[in-house]
Length: 433
Image 1 (tube, rainbow, N blue to C red):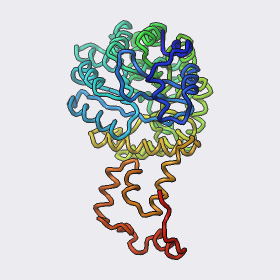
Image 2: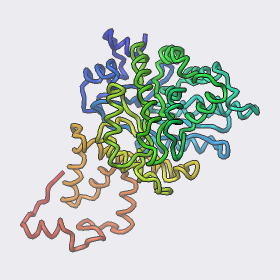
Image 3: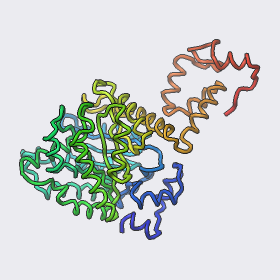
Image 4: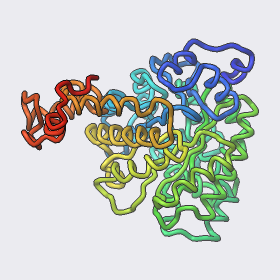
């Protein structure tokens, strides 16, 4: 029995009930959302997770952090530290995208440390192992590609990205309308190459029923990857992206009817004025499935500051109905992120997610902001710092320039607007928190 089957039968695990404590919905609404497929709660049956999360309709917008080794940099302890920093900074999920070193061992160590849902892209390991033994990626067998998914499920992975929408059909759409950047998804590019070289259909698509069986057995959530996502503004909303999304919508229904949880991945690089339409299109084509977006990035020239670019797009996407934001670090497009890059990426996208929740009127989303405003009016520095999304940085910055001063900050001094206005209005007791 899958989680969906259990919930339909009235069996509600304790960990499901714990999720609503931090969400603006009832336990009944959460259960109904999971059963209908509008919410996912990723948790492998083999996992002991201290901080489960749910993603989808009516919930807080969640943020994912990607970590993992590369062929050039494979420092396991650094990835452990990235995981810890990401979680401490508020990440709601972690994905291991490792392509270098002992990938299974790295994955197992990270899972053991991870308190939140943990995801992977199994084809990365399959491709890396083929490369390591001197074989071309196109020489992978369908069994090896499917087997990688099963291996990750058996290790306790909670959700897997599978690029099931890369098919002959979506490749034909790409050929009909050429792009500036072709295919920027790593998993998508691997499968495009495999399909063309072998003149066969994508095994993840052709043997989709086997994926469903694996995910059902281990309660792994399917994250249907956007292998045709636009990698630049010019390619957004083109034929290949839309064709793939249609395929993902069809596949989502098949998995959901079998009791497997599904979310849909999305762009990518999208002009600011097109984000709302992109979210609406996914919700329509995929019947309200949770939408997991990368950013989206709203300009292509933010190298070194792409976390800010992604936060701009992420806030708009969240407000428009996106459910899950994949963080982007300052080093996106430039290299493997450092520990500090991970911290910056998570904290910046958490701001975007929160702003989006306020924008879409999520109940209670602005409560903390009101408390911050009261603390500022009262010149209550300790309260302001405690309410900040990043209290550590707020405390450091205030101490560096204002020290122990309690009546104002070093920017305004005696010209502090709150202080001057309160005195002029005769307000002896500023608003208390």
